[in-house]
Length: 200
Ligand code: GRF
Image 1: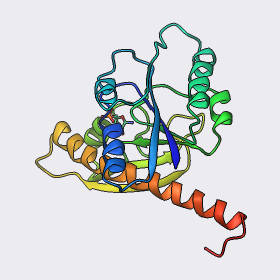
Image 2 (image 1 turned 180 degrees about the horizontal axis):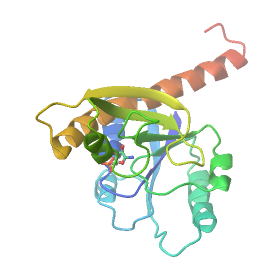
Image 3 (image 1 turned 90 degrees about the vertical axis):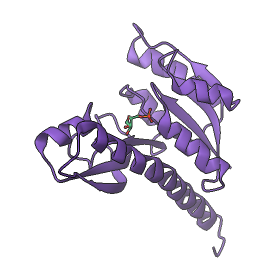
Image 4 (image 1 turned 135 degrees about the horizontal axis):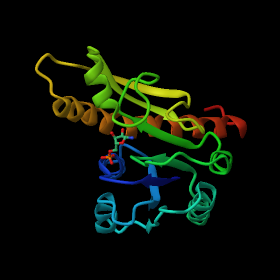
C-alpha cells in the first residue's frame, strides 16, 4: 500500500478529499502522516478526528533548509512513498526536492502555467479569462513550475464572482487530486511490476 505524506498549511479540504477517496475505496493508499507548518491549521482538526498521525510544526523564523530537514525526518520515520502538498504555503528546499525526487505532487487552482503563485483564482477573474481550472503537477524548486500531470478546465460564467468561481474550481480540485494520485500510484506499481518481469 502506497504511503502518503500530506503537507498542509490551512483549511485542508483537498486533504479531506484524499482521505475520503481512500475511505470509499477510490484511492488505494494510506495516509502515513499529516504535517503542518502552521500549528493551528484548521486542517489538523479533521486529521486528529480521524486519528491520523499529526505533526504540527511551526516554520516561523526557521531557515527553509533547517525546517525542511525536520519535515524530511518525519516523512522518513513515517515511511512515506509519495508526498502530497495540499495547500502547503511554502517553497521546498533543494534538499527536500532531491530527497523525494519525482515523488512530490501539488494541486494548484489554475490552468498552469497561467496564474502561478498566490490568489490564482483572483488573478484569473481579474484577467477576465473565460476558462480557468486546476492543475496537479510534480513539484520542483520553482513556484508551481513542475511538470503537469492533469488538469480540469472550469468555465468562467458571466454571473461569477471571485468567490463563486473559486468554489467551482475547488469542487474540481477535490475530484482531480485523488484521481491523479491514484493514476501516479498505478503507474508506479505498473513500473515496479514490469521491472520484476511480470507479464502484467
Ligand atoms: C487549494 O486551492 C489548492 O489548490 C491550493 O491551495 C488551496 C488549498 O485549499 N494549493 P485546501 O486547504 O485544500 O482547502
